[in-house]
Amino acid sequence: ALDGGEDGLDLQRRVVAEAPSWLRPGGRLVIETSREQAGQTEALLSSRGFTTSVETDDEVDGTAVLGRL
Image (cartoon, rainbow, N blue to C red; front, side, top):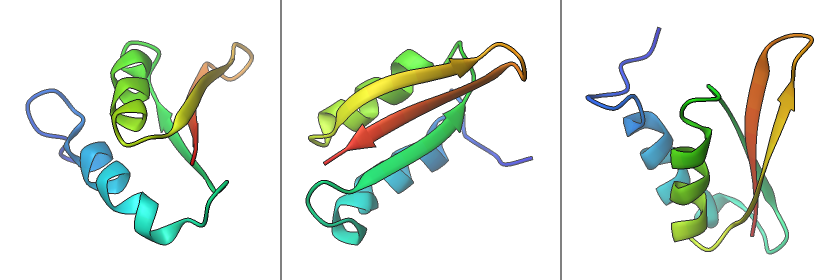
């Protein structure tokens, strides 16, 4: 397991902060997360200029936040 810091989002913060330099305009970043943290993850992406959506799959109990530059 990864150490995400106090709120579990430290690694996500690092990825979201650096992702704009990796992605071309229109590029997408997908972060798998928990349903409980999806709103916070979405806010992180939005704060860096990403357009966001949250996708869930009840069959596998999966949640991902999608961000598009």
